[in-house]
Each structure stands twice: as C-alpha cells, then as structure tokens.
Image (tube, rainbow, N blue to C red; front, top):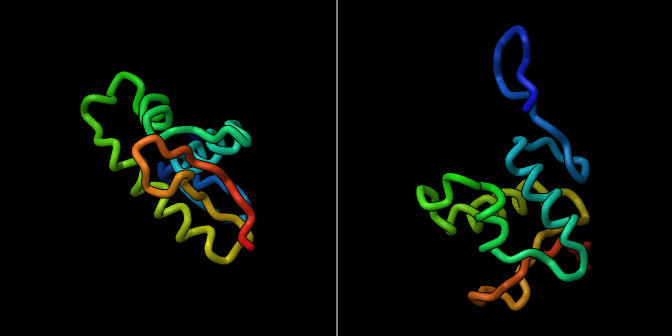
Length: 97
C-alpha cells in the first residue's frame, strides 16, 4: 500500500480507468484473475481478510462490490454474480451490453 510522504494518506490506485482504494483494486484484481470460472464470495472474503475473517462479515464483500460497481458506472465494465444472489454465486467481471 503506497502512502503519500507529505500528507500520509493512502494513494489511490486505478483500475479500469477509475480511481479507487487499494482494497477495491485488489477485489477487481482477484475477480479478474479468476477468469471465466469466477470467484465466490467465500473465496474473496477469505483472501481479503486472511487472519481476520471471523471479525469481518461476508456482507462486506457484497458492499464493496456494490461500491465498485457505482465507481464503474461511467465505464463499460460491471461486476456481476452468477447465479444472481445465490449462496453459491461466483463473481465475474463483464462488459456492459
């Protein structure tokens, strides 16, 4: 995580043409790396909060994905769950139609 040496704030990163926090960029990277198979909420949760997963709700992943999708509105990209909303849903990065 890069920190500005003058103001000590976390330097935002860019993914898909949008500035976002390093955590949100990591979520996009993980979903992108999962390819066509996608990645489950459980897998994202475990990898994001490794060591702290009992202290964080799985709902946090869904909230972050929703926030990322809000940031991606001006782009051709969206993160979708397939099957939509199911417990075994897997997240995918898709181009908007």
